Image (cartoon, rainbow, N blue to C red):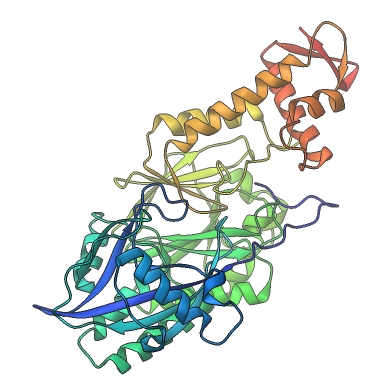
Length: 461
């Protein structure tokens, strides 16, 4: 992705689908337990994650009528687990909407119910669920902390709340879960893996994204990477999330940038001023106009280690999208905070004036060779490490398609771009020409094509 060019409209946010989920409790040998299902590995949304039974509303739930969310929760519970609980017996425990960083979003109502101890362990009644289990919340949280199970970020705070009150009266549990949902909707603690918090912030970024991810990795100390929003309300949300982490006894060291584009830096000055923090980035980024007004600036060089007392980051210089782009390896954890090296929601724009397609593909190739397990991009949800291989293949296929349009007779850039990007007709003409030009300049540097007169006409070398 990149900052929004002049004249291009920002993308609309994806409209959430109404859904409902049931937090089912039962007495167990060591106290109350909660029902979780392991989502199918083929699921589009959070495959393989442990979550509460639930799903989207459909016509039989009578959307728009009173009680629709409870009917949805009861129906989904029976369809997924075989357990039958009347909609009227479900107690609502708050609502939450999926952040706009995801390509699929849900507006979910949560309900609580309890069944007696004589109920048998349920067997999945749907291919959406691979396994069902009743468990104590502390055991699930311990497995997640140790990396032995995956839990969706919206479920984690509810499990933490349950851990604190699971054996109290149901009314107390409902109150606690409702309060957590209210706080999470306003200023969420989003963790895909332990120790790496994040907050998607509304920014003026390239469609189809509407947000930029501010990542907050650390141990007893942490940093904020890419606070990109210029909107005061979004900056306030970020400060509230930071204060939640500081409330756990964690100290904040610095604001860190992957690169200088506005959708990654626009909130940096305000955050540095609010918390009296230094700004850290590659020297080329610190020299850029968007950060010139920040007094405390410290360079990060390739290979530098950032010790966060329980987590260590390793700066990896990854130019191409911008001259000073840095990604951050999470040492010994198999992760990479990737900035705009890759996107979880679309492709990355490499502008010919400020970027380099050759450098970009070289950076992708080097990072792919490092064999990271998880990539934490600047836009969209995390990706598996093999996404680098897919992206490299995509870029090489695009390059080959461009070359197919060029022969011994001069061909103008517009014609080349239009033919090479015919598979994405919705992409604005100006953008496909920019991307085509970046590829052509790289091909020229490699002696494969050459310009005739200017950037508008090309032939085979």
